[in-house]
Image 1 (spheres, rainbow, N blue to C red):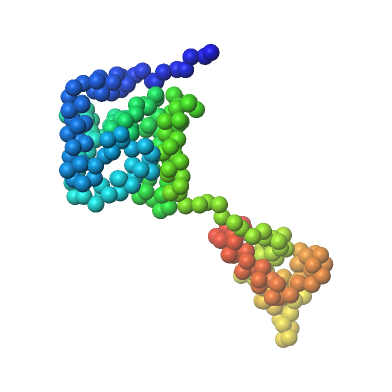
Image 2: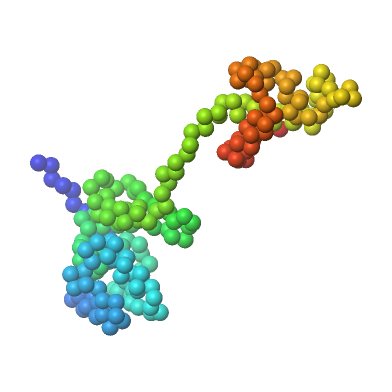
Length: 241
């Protein structure tokens, strides 16, 4: 049987292990837990069993003006109180009473609720393997449920081919009219070349082709096709400037 690789045995790993094994750490953790109990937001004796349970507690915690932080424990050991690796490992240890097999994996996930909608980021460093994901999978599942659904149901655009052909032709004819390029065979009742986009379209071979396929193309059909394309395609620039 292939032996499972151990955690990333780097400098951070041994710093964390030394901290966990010290009597100073045990004393600081006890004071940390006692303080939350005094504030009325106790951490369970057996610690949190799920990420959801932890976040329910954290929600109540945010109502307080001041409370202990994990950074204070790190500072007591002369460690950087903003170090993501240490903070994540410490949170795992104190809040869940667990030591992840791969402490580095804890910094691979980031929940950003400053964005609208919120975003869940997963960092993929060179050492990350499938088995490392097991440490952060509960977090991923929890945050996934908080993400807005991206499973938007769209009705199929049945008349897309026809609508797009009419829309593209409409844009091109309108552009040609603005440049003074008129089909002279399309005239007004006064004998002048018409500047109506809808009437000018009738003189283009593409219009005759689609009219032949559809049987008939009315002005209302063109107007509806243009509206639908504008609504669905938004700012898409189709013409060469």
